[in-house]
Length: 311
Ligand code: NAD
Ligand code: UDP
View 1 (cartoon, rainbow, N blue to C red):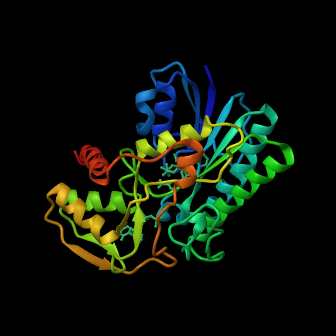
View 2 (view 1 turned 90 degrees about the vertical axis):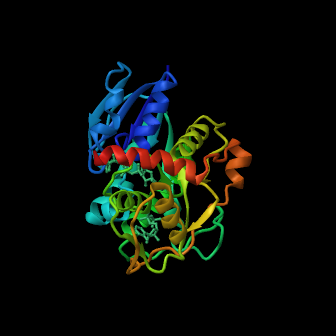
């Protein structure tokens, strides 16, 4: 039985990862300070003797003994990470230092949940791992973007300097059940608005694009990366390469929910990236991964989940 630590395990992605790793027969420690995560996301796992939760902030050192660490702790939605930007940078940077220090002490393999945001508002399309990005260092998104970039730097320096066994995945927009209904992200916002026949809020003219990966596909990729040969360290893009305009996503959600909502336009947030689409050829060749869930299928599952939140 492998002992695995998941930081941010009560969040959207973390809760799915915990469930999968527990189902696969591992012994888990989930660490979370419940800033954006919730006990409800992991309540189904409490009955297992191999699932342990620690309320802990990764900005402070942690002493546990495990074989593998998945480092996910960090708010991911713009409204949450901009709520306390100093804390966001601390979580990314101090959290990475603490988890890397832990991995070094106990000789554990460690995977960092990095992000497509490290590419900023990209001038190269689709984004390949070699691209260094176009990030504003002083804007409202910088606490997250630069925090995550610095965390990647720390991971690669620990690898070069201390020969640490690292893995870095750059996650593109992911959606599915257990997303926070009020986290302001586009999929949760549009579904909640559509289900309540409220106006669908498009920021800007809706021609900006994103590529949406269903949670089960992403979790497969994260586990494939963690269990791959130690030569594969990344960074590796994990995301669905099918690109959608935000206006088209709104139309699909209106159709699937049979909503009476109308579409309205609001101001585009500062530094909102105009295009985003992963090049996943590296993930295909080095870990034999690609997503298989069609957007409409994943959205149906997500809509069913949000319906339960409205009851
Ligand atoms: P989330 O906000 O649902 O989960 C983050 C979890 O981390 C929450 O449970 C939160 O309470 C916890 N957390 C935050 N600060 C903490 C701290 N200081 N100490 C301990 N726990 C803390 O977000 P998510 O969508 O599940 O994202 C998980 C990870 O994946 C994040 O690192 C995020 O940057 C990365 N990511 C997510 C996406 C996406 O589309 N969801 C895209 C790119 C990268
Ligand atoms: N967006 C939107 N309406 C919303 C929420 C988001 O039009 O109610 C847009 C947002 O401006 C961005 C895209 O949807 O262009 C994705 O936003 P999200 O916050 O989900 O993720 P990120 O910008 O981090 O990719």
